[in-house]
Image 1 (cartoon, rainbow, N blue to C red):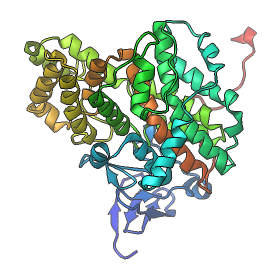
Image 2: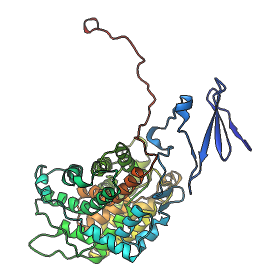
Image 3: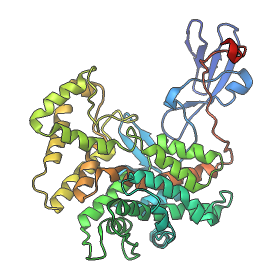
Image 4: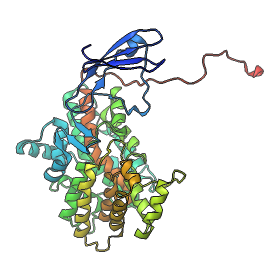
Length: 447
């Protein structure tokens, strides 16, 4: 080795490394294990441990996989320290300000921004896949009216394979693409139907003359008795929210989609698994928690009281919408949504904006407090998205549904990339067994 950094870990293995490899020395047996160091296009290097168990009977231990790269991917890159989010090399700020959601969807799926002809063809394909099988409306009737929309989403999306079984052969590239288009196209329709069902209103069919975001808003809020007037500012904000939530690297739900897909499961089942994972309050339900928190605070005068609670380790109160598992800087998506928040509330004529004013004051005070600054607890994308969605008219129960709608394109792109990887193997995490060793069975009469 040309230059070594040796770390003596007592009875633990010693690690020696240079730019190309890592050598682990077992201090008990003095055996040496040489492992390669892999370099990505950008970002942190990785130690290749694929042969560590087969050749040396050693496992790595990494609960929650926070230090483990589970795959190679060309789709999304995050630099949490600098607050950078790239999709196929393009910054989220550029995409959110200059592109449409369907442009970003094409980018995630195909790897490059579309030209005008490619975008027109893709938009036409998605637009003409937005209708769902007519029998699906009877499927909805099997749910209780007060069922959470996310539970309906999981059931309906999982059932799509029964309605569209002509696109479930994952070995066929054409079927993979058709399934991808169907999921992206039909998710707004399915989400709007879940909302309509929960409030007892008739389903509204998609309209091919509307954009992706406008069509979703129309299916959600229109009624047969009168025309729904689309506000262009709201449509733009909705499209921007979809872009900001389109993909976010190997998070919990995306990893769930990949793990389900590694078994060869059909794409509809894989996306349903992702929706189920996203439903968790630590993942997709955070923006709903932000709105509930702001309502609990109620008044700007009470902010110091709640800031004190948040810093008290004996208190169960937490500042929702601050901090992120990956970002140790300001979430780049939050800055974009902060701007959209003002635009939407002004366009809707909401002059008295108590939640927004409360949120801005809370952000100002928190970012001046050493406790939050030292811990790098900056506002994330959930901090402002809930306020926008509430202003548009969505109930909090729909917030995570909108997240799932937008994230579907990322899940599909990640699933497609994984299935097309020739090195694909079924996912099989290992464990560190801490239970009882083998012991003799005791007959029931002697226990």
